[in-house]
Length: 156
Image (cartoon, rainbow, N blue to C red; front, side, top):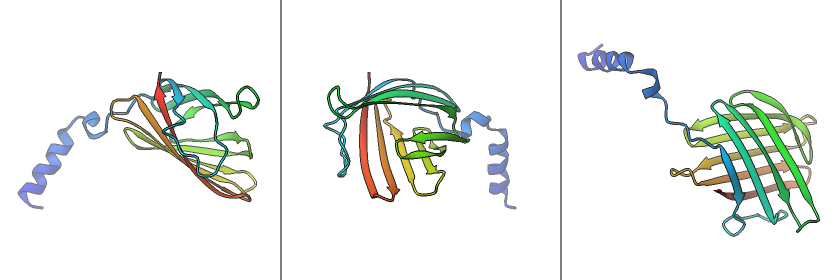
């Protein structure tokens, strides 16, 4: 091993553990859909989505309301669990397992697979550097085909 390689290894060994990990964005708060900045890719366009998130890494809990037609079609959703662990979950198209993993300090990737193996949904959630905008890129595949859309939220 060269002198420079030994020095680099020693420097890494002496560095505090926290310095090796990226700062994790806090997703906590109330987020409201901005329909004008979102794109729907042929799927049903909601009128409003409001999400309340509690985030204490690795714990993540969210609940919200999705409205498709003003006052006519309102749905609630919720989740609680740790990032990095698989959890039972329910979607409008079935029950299955959800795994949320951390990509970097501002990005989460989640995968839902239905118990019957017919549906898969992947979501990549990224928070802006200033913590005020959240973008969710969603892809759902199943018997009805493939849908892709992007939701843009602003922190209230």
